[in-house]
Image 1 (cartoon, helix red, strand yellow):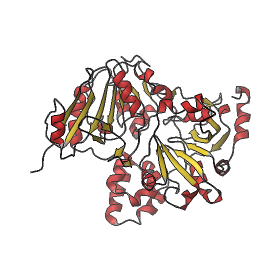
Image 2: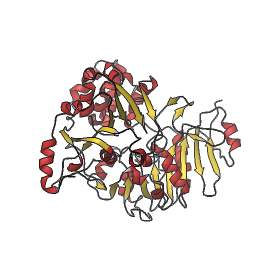
Image 3: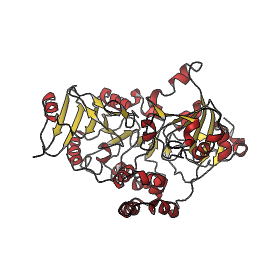
Image 4: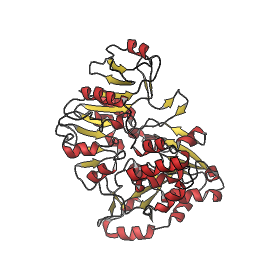
Amino acid sequence: MKGPANWQEHYRAGLISAQDAARLVKPGMRVHFPLAGGSIVQRALAARSGELAGSVDVRLTSPLIDPGWFASELGRAFQFEFELFIGNLARPAHDALRGSYLPNLFSTAFKALEERPDEAKPIDLTFVNVTPPNDSGFVSFGPHQWNKREYIRHAEVAVAEVDKSLTRTYGDVWMHVGEFDYFVEATPPTPDPAVLESELVQMEPAKRDQLRTIVAEAGIERVLPIARYLARMSPTEVRVLLGIAPPPKEYEAIAGYLSELIEDGATIQIGVGDPSAQMPRLGAFEAKHDLGLHTEMVAPGIARLVDRGIINGQRKTVHRGKAVAVAWSGSDPDDLRIIDDNPGFELYDPGYVLKLSTLTSNYHQTSINNALTIDLTGQINSETVLGARMINGTGGQPEMHLGAFLCPGGRDHAGAVNRDKWHDLADRATNGARRAGDDSAFFRGYRRDGIRDCAAARQEPS
């Protein structure tokens, strides 16, 4: 690390353009773009596809943009590997075998590099986005920190996209500019309504009108990043992607079951998929007292629960009184306004937050996640459809479930909607299943006595 007296010199010497940053990538290299890691250099690298005489191993985590390399000739120079999360934009590329999926754990992701560096494949380049440096030469990563600091410290060369639009956060979030090799000053451009309009005018009128309603509801700043994908998505899919789809009726029953299981004072973790992401807005945590938050990411409405005092962390044993996460991804705009420059919300690296020893030290750590399918013995699948098609990936769910199960007083919960014609067999295979009408189910997870029970319901068609 450079000393504080010369950090400005180090920063100025390392300033390069996005195009020059992309030219650092050579065939045969392993290049990483961590989750929510910036978009400017990704686009510059995709544009270099024709110049690369060989394959580049590009590792991505739930990419938020497609610079054209997933579905066009721009991708011919790249071998894509999706780590932890595939995400909506990359799923078609994975389906088409243009990329592979890498199952991994956040808490052990760098174990090979740390303990067997001579055997592990090195990280040649990593690209992340950061705030401008403060007066002491330190940067942070905005609300979506994830494992960016860990990637920087394990990469041979680290490049920072300096983004003035990133908000201030608290916790263990700082890094000195001396830990980076290059800097690209590249704040994303202000959303341009003309770009979105050029996409909309090419669509048939009914779809165009529905999408304009969505833009008015969600805001153009949220829709513009996905403008180029609107033509191949239905309005319903757009609402789901933006997190503004109305929750299905059966989720109300799931929220009711979950509310019965959440104890006052519990330290909760909640996943961003459905149905868990709908639980705050459906009242699953209303009338609860002194809840804590220790989570990988969040669901819309969680920051508002903190603001109202329902989540206050008063009984937490780790970071008492603080809401703790790896990233504030999953928050809606109202949540992010609450989190911005708020010391009650803290971010830490996933290697610490998701470590089993950290999770089991919490007060009644309680995980709330999702399942795609559940078999008759209670085994949960949250990753694939019929074992062949990857939907998203493991993320932090394995660690959170295990940590909650092993934590004294902890519980792990998985939510799912039962659309299986064999639901009656599932009811008989799980003691204590309860009928409640509608097409819904909530699989409660392991109770403290180790017995799995299931609250299930379905309304058969006449």
